[in-house]
Structure formats: C-alpha cells, structure tokens
Amino acid sequence: MTKSLTVGPPVRLIILFTLPLLLGNLFQQLYAVADTLVVGRLLGVDALAAVGASGSLQFLLFGFAMGASTGMGIPVARAFGSGDLRATRRAVAAGAIVAGLIALAITLVGTLGSHALLSLLGTPAELMPDAQTFLSVFFAGSVVTVGFNFLSSMIRALGDSRTPLVFLIIASVLNVGLVLLFIAVFRWGVGGAALATVAAQGISVALCLVLIGFRIPQLRLRAADWRVGRVELGEAARLGLSMGFQMSVIAIGAAVLQYGINSLGTDAVAAFTAALRVDQVAVIPLASVGVAISTYVAQNRGAGQWWRIRYGVRQTALMAMGLSLVLSLAILLFGTDLAGLFVGPGEHRVVAMAHEYLVINGSLYWVLALLFVWRGALQGMGSTWVPTVAGVMELLARAAVGLMLVAPLGFLGVTLAAPLAWVGALVPLAAAWFLQRRRLVLAERALAEAEATGVLEPVASCRG
Image (cartoon, rainbow, N blue to C red; front, side, top):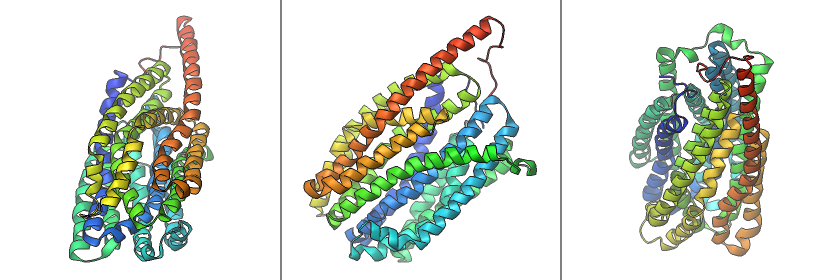
C-alpha cells in the first residue's frame, strides 16, 4: 500500500501518483459543487449569493487545512524516504499535535467570529442571515476538515495517493445525497448544505483511522512516539504553519477581493460564485501535480537522490504546461455553459459576467501550472521562506485589485485579480527554483566525486 518514490522512472511515478490526487480533488470539489447546485436551484440566487459571500472564508479554512497538512507531511515523507520508520512515526505524532491545535483555533475563531468576519467583507444585509448560518455550521465542523486533510496527507507521504481517493469518493457521494436530503426533504436551508459537508467529511476521518489501524503499521503510533521533542514539534509547526499561511494569505486576498465584489451587488456575487466553482474544478489537475511533486521531492531528498529531484521537476513542469493548454481550451469552449448550470433560467447577466471571468482566467493557466510545480518542489526541499513571500505577493495583488480596480472597472476588475496574483507569485518562485536547481547540480557533482574516491557508498539504491 505504501510506495517509495525514490526508485523507478521519475515521470511515470509522478504521473501515477498524481492521477489519484487529481480524481480525489475532483471529488472533493463535489462538496462545493453539490452545495452550490442544490442551493442555487432549490433556494434561489439570493441563497446562492449568501453561500458565495462566505466563499473566501470557506477557502480560508480549506486552504489553511490543506496547506498545513501538506507541510506536516513533508518531514514524514523525508523520514520514510530515508528508511527510518521510527522517525516517520515521530514526525506523524508531532504533526498530529500541531494539527489538533490548529483545529481548535479555527473552530473557536470561526464559530465565535462569523458575523464579524462577514461584516468586514461588506456582506449585503439581505445576505447576512443565510451567510452567517452557513459559515457557523461550516466552522463548527472544522475539526473533521483538518482531521481528514491531515490523515490523507500522512497516507500520501508514504507514497499512497489511491486510498484517500477511495474515501473521498465515498464521502462525495454521501455529501450529494445528504445535501439533497437536508435541503429538499428536511428544509434546513443553507445550514443543511454546510451540515452535509461536515457529516460526509466526518465519515472520511473514520475510514482513514480504520485503515491505519488495520493496514498501515508505519502510521500506527506507539506510546513512545508521542514523546516528541522540540525539534520534531518545531519542524512540524514551521512547515505546517508556513504552508498553511501561504494558502491563508491567498484566502485573505480573496476576502479583500470579495469585499469589492460584494459592493457590485447580488448578481456579481452570484456570477463570481458560479464562475469560481468552474474555475476551481478546471485547475484541480494543476494543483494535484503540485502536491505530487512536493511528496516526490521530499522522499528523494530524504534518500539523497539529487539528480532525480532535478530531472523530475523539469519533466513535471513541461507536463504541467502541456496540461494547462488543454485545460485552457476546455474552459474556453465549455466553461460558460457549465457556469450557467449553477443559476436558474433567465439569469443572462449573471452568466455573461461568469463568461468574462472564465475567458480571462482560462487563458493564463500556463502561469498557474509553473507556479504549482515550482512551489511544490521548493516546499518538498523544506523551503518555507520563498513560498511564503510568493503567497504575500499573491495577497498584495488580490488586495490591490479588490481595493483599487473593482470600483473603476466593475466586474472586469474582479476577473483580473487571479491572473495578476499568479504572475506576482511566480516571479520569486522562479528565481528561487533556479537557484535551488544550481545547488542540486553542485550536490550531484560532490556526490559523484565522493563515490569515485570511495569515500561514500553510492546512494542510487537507497531504500524508501
């Protein structure tokens, strides 16, 4: 079930590891898509806009949980790649402690401050009751969101990206059924949509724990594993909080942008919500490649396989660029029709604005492809500073658009936010990766010289 990424053809390994991630992320998006479709169709545009008004705060939770979990999986992947199972378990224990504290903090802040957060975003008064209801239920269940992302990341760190996919499929199907039951039958409104998501993810957490207990001894912690020191806790917190922060600053930028969108009225909020759902699904393959390359790099870093890191990242970047062109074509051809599914008939203005958003964003997916690959590679190498700087640049770009361009340009300003943010983040990531690549070349040469003189044993066959 576990798999080493330190031996075998790099590109083939990365593709095979990415495919389950891709399918898993697609099914994870079904949570949001099912909520949006059912809310928009059964409860109307105002209810859809209410869910959308809290979208940036939902992204804040999901983004932080996913980023932090990926970060805490890097020490686990590195220890597993080096063949040290005791260090692997201790890294898992340290991550679990940090994840628990993160879940507690998110729950308290989200449930107690939902009204204040929505007010800061300038949420229209007519949307506030439904938006607050949705957000309160959503944040109350944040412990299962953090828990599932953490457990999935631990399983993936050992090279298994297929098992989390199975659990996501089960949870996604359950979510679709539950959201229909809670809204169409029980008439629980937008709160029922949020509750369906929480319940489905809770089942995923239970399945992960059962699997670890019976099938993955490397993650089965012993009493001694919990006695982690400051080094393990510090690394888990540094990588987890740093990568969570990177995703959070993007969400904060989106929240500032949401403030500008809310000022444009209900139709603009609904159009942005519908277009964003399509856009998020379209970029899932690129995001999946980024997660895969971070795990691949971390395992090979633990094994000292420097040439595999350099080669794997280069080939993955080329693959992601080709994939981005296919996605751009698909979004230009079919994106508008898909966005129209989220609103009822006759909402031509909403669909027109959604079309504008998708055309501009879809044409620049190639920038996002490079961003995901180089950021994932740097994170896999343990770098936190440059990806954080890139995240801050994304924040500044989105915030600048939300505060300066939306008012004079209207919805066109909204459509420019993400592309400008991608370009701003790509600049430091590109510079940092090319410097890192140079260091890898020097490390390869030093290793080759050491092996030639008999100082070191060859590392090409290091165990995973």
